[in-house]
Image (cartoon, rainbow, N blue to C red; front, side, top):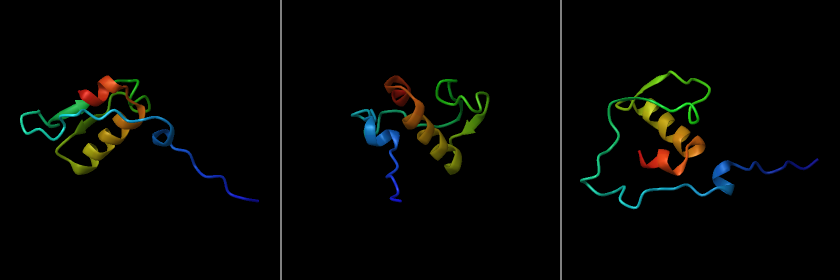
Length: 74
């Protein structure tokens, strides 16, 4: 029995990344956030602290995986 390769969403759907993400005058993520239900449907009221590396990583992961292009821009 051969093992099937795993297909991730990023393999089939492009991720929208803002063109000015590296610009110093563009505000960077900070503070505490609650993600919209369509992005974080499994824990809709969870508050993430973006100063915490694990929380920040999880937010980026969820927004890129579940979010819409407008969610990436926010």
